[in-house]
Image (cartoon, rainbow, N blue to C red; front, top):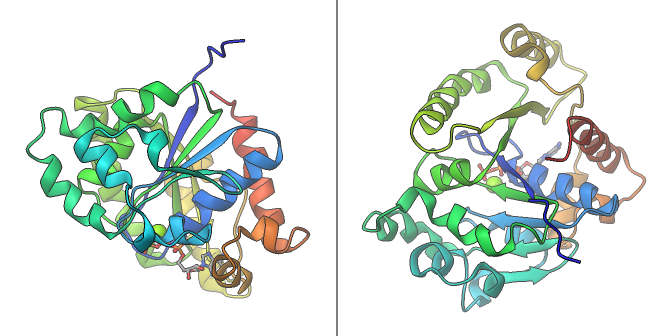
Length: 257
Ligand SMILES: Nc1ncnc2c1ncn2[C@@H]1O[C@H](COP(=O)(O)OP(=O)(O)OP(=O)(O)O)[C@@H](O)[C@H]1O
Ligand SMILES: [Mg+2]
């Protein structure tokens, strides 16, 4: 039977580095997959961290997201099946912004790449680099929702204004429907007063767009990618796995489309 429903496309974005974009993309995606949803992850970061976190060596790839974005290679050619399906990236993606700048419709390359597969998945989760350049713009143009991981520190909050300005520009010019699904406090050290204060400031400014779920600091998140696994597979009953299952429930309660 032909499935007519389209995937819900979620992008994980924050131009600040090291706030758990990649960690959240993978572990939330695996939490959806555990519930029986069909999930594709897309690595839009030249660092290839998402690709590596499923045990794939970016340097060994003959074709990757670069070829999809720049040469219109069908995305199925770069999808590998692991815990979830993953469209892989390698360092050559760093040249994609310049290569794409010559293309007509350069902001829509990813959206176009999704068209043939958009009915094959329930969720498409896109990891982005720590910048608001053309790769992230492609992701925001192809998506309907944005999840913003934020480290629980005062200085991390300030960057959110810039992200909101970019989103505003995307809505005006490229994708009127894209909206923030939620802001996710990550790398939380619940013992410190500073983390609690930082969350209070977030809630004052963003209200109920801040997820009720919080992701605490634990070394499991550093250990799991070394084994090429999500934390849900690495330590299925651990606190880290549970926190992403809770986040999945929260996102699903908003509806799957
Ligand atoms: N809750 C957590 N507790 C402890 N360490 C974490 C947690 N979440 C992520 N990390 C670790 O913090 C580092 C940064 O995480 P991650 O790579 O997901 O961030 P990122 O936002 O994708 O970074 P970049 O901007 O470079 O792409 C990684 O080493 C990761 O293993
Ligand atoms: Mg990353």
